[in-house]
Image 1 (tube, rainbow, N blue to C red):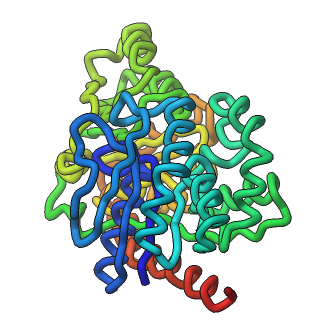
Image 2: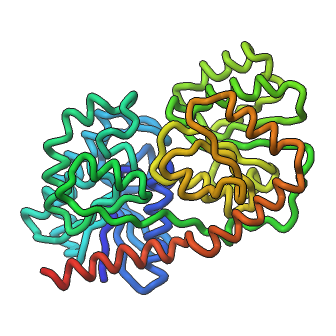
Length: 378
C-alpha cells in the first residue's frame, strides 16, 4: 500500500505531531508499505529528499520559526498544500492520505478528494478540535467549524489519539464516529542502563507556552524550598520571559535551568540524567514527551487531563494531580522527591507499560487497517 502522510510539520520542523508522523512513516516502511510525506519547507531544507526509506516533498508555505507557527502560516500551508500539492497527488496516486490535523492538512486532503477520489483519514491531534485550548484557539475554531465538519464527514475515518480527545470531537460533531489510535514510542531509543536516583533532578520537555502550566509548576516548587531538587526545562516559546521573571519572584532561579530547544538526539541523554518527569499541562491530546519519559524509565507527575491520565497510572507509574492547582502539585512532589526507592519503582513500571502497549508499529498497523477497510468499502 502507498500512503501519503500530509503534515504541516515534520522533523526537524515542529513538535509532537511531526515526531508522530516520522515514526509512523518509518514503521510503515518497515512493514513493507510505500510512504510519501508532504510537509512544509523551512529555511534551507531541500524541496525533496529520501529518508529512512520514504520520500519527503516540502511545499513552499510560509513558516518563520522551526518549532512554532502562527495561524496565518497554517493557513498558508492549507492553501499551498491544496493547490501545489494536487499535481503531486495526481502523479503519485497514493492509495490513501493520512492527514495530521483536521486543518490545515485535513482541509487540503478534503479538497484533493474531489479531484482524485483518494480516501483520506484525519488524525486529530488536539488544537484542531473545537473546545481544545479555548484560551488559544477560540477565534480560529469559531471560523473553522463549518469547514471542519465538511472535512470530517467526507473522511474515510476520523481518529483521535486519546479517549479524552475523542470525546471532545464527539461533542463537536456527534454524527461522525471517531476511532482512537494512541501515539507510540520507540522504547529501545530511550532505554537507560543505569540511573542515579538522588539527588532529585526534575525534567520538563515541551513548548514553553501557557498550555503547559509551567507557571503552576513554579508556584508549586516555590513551596518546596526545604527540599532538595533542581529543574531542567527543555524547550522555548512565548512564555519564556514570564517564567524567568517568576523564577526570580519565587526565588528559585538558582535551581531552575532553562536549556532551550535541544536536538532530538539529545533527549535520551537528558532523560537519563533526570529522575522525575513533570508535566503540569492544562490541555493535551496524547503527549509524546510523557511517553518518551516513561520509556526512559522515569516516573511522571502530571495533571489529570485527557492524554496524561490515559498514560500515567496514578500511584503506579507516577502521580496525577488536578490541573491549575499549585498546592496539589506541591504535595505530590513533596511526596516523591525524598523517596528515591519509590521513584525508581514507579519508573520501572512506566517502562514496562509502554513496552507492552505503546509501540509505533501498533499505531501504524491500526492506520493501515483503517485504509484497508476504506478500500474494501469503496
